Image 1 (cartoon, helix red, strand yellow):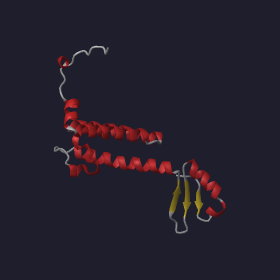
Image 2: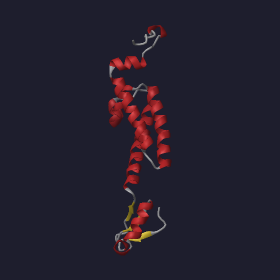
Image 3: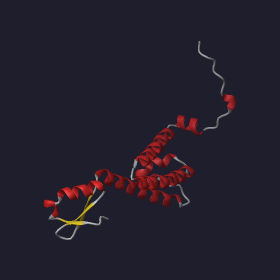
Image 4: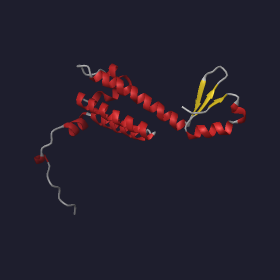
Length: 152
C-alpha cells in the first residue's frame, strides 16, 4: 500500500498530488466514514482482475483434475471449452496456466496470459471438428506422403 494516506478533504486542494500518486501506481484515500479507497491506473485494475479470474479458474480446474473422474461440462462451467481435451492435456493446461499467471503478475502485464488463453481456445475449436481432430491426433505413416513434383 501507499505510504501516504490522503483524507477525503484532500481531494479539493491536493488533487494534483493524489492523481500523480495514482498514475505512479496507487493513491490511498480515507473517506469520512473511515472507508479506505484506492485510486490506480485502470490498466492495472484490469490486469489484477484478469489474474484473479484466471487464478480462480486455475484452482478450480486443478481441484477437478485431482478427482479420478474426468470433469463434466457442468464441473468445467465457464471453462467448458476445455471439454475436448483429455486428462493429460488438461493437466498440461493447468501447469502452463500456473506459470503464465506467475509471469503475468511479475511483469504486471496480462498479454502473455491473453495469448496463452487465445492459443488454447483456438486449439479447442480445432479439436471440436472431427476431421481436424483426426488429422491433428491421428497416426501418420511416412509412406502416406509422396514428394510433389515442381509446378511447371
